[in-house]
Image (spheres, rainbow, N blue to C red):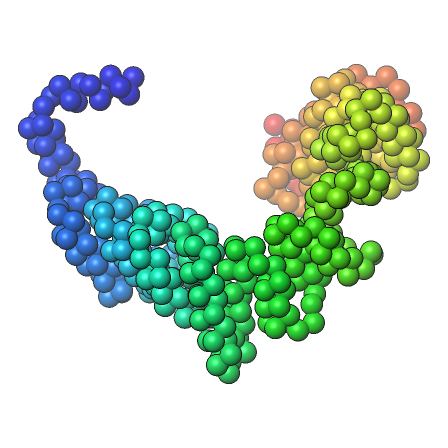
Length: 448
């Protein structure tokens, strides 16, 4: 379809297309801008970019959060014009750097609570910078430009260019940058300013896989190392291929430390794999599986111990889960994911008093699944929890959902053969009418 339209446009000839584009430009600033970009010389396109960037700096308008998305597209178009109009790599690098240096103006003239504007700097501008920088032969000049831009970074956005240095600069040039940053840090009297330079060194050290330099810089920056710092140092050593040193840094973290436990365990998993320590790896994966039962954690475990042990592992864990008294929706979700619907029903019925309608996302999903499996009693109990949560909070915006749940309960009641120790639907309904009968807006809509 698209190729057919393109061919028809080609057949119309250049004169007809030029007239159509000019007519469109009368009603569209973007079309008019595209025409100017197409007919301009490279030198004129450079001037156009500079003029638009200067226009932003002198603009008095303010873009609120509702207009941030449109403003981000305007900035993207500005960069696109640069990409289309400037071929010289060094000129392109300099102009993208000028765009980063306009960050103060751009962020002060808008509300970027949505993050749309920041993404233009972190993705669109960065990709364009790297594209130009890769094609530029004067790598020392590019390094100087990156450092110049990063002397100040009031909005935490300019370091994007530091973080991508490894994509466009050789190691010897990056080491020269590190030496310059270290000199700046040594001369800096302001603690925040010094730490800023050291953080840039950390980024560059990681990119060239110099874990020792990363470690040294992190210690110089923060002194006493936190759990997060220990994990960061271990990660860089692992990335640089020094598995044993990475492991030694992780051992410094107390076993009962829960902060960033997920990140630590991911690193340990990779370390054990590289060390060939199947015993430690199995132990770690069992811990992760028991902490959070899911198909992913089960699969990771079976990949190591063998899929022939699947039934044994599931059988053991099923017995352990059914012995626990505290309800965790994830346990029921796990039973469902492995096809154990009977066990999921047993688990939920045995902990029905803990069903909490405030856990809307997980509880509704479980209710819908059990309803599809014709487990009407446990389904009713979960919908009761969802309904009670809405009524107790008096959340009027959710009343339509509550009414839907109550009507579903009315319908399900006819299918429940054995209510076991739970109240029949009529008794439950009488209870909520007694407790919430004064919520007239709910009951009037329900009765309609």
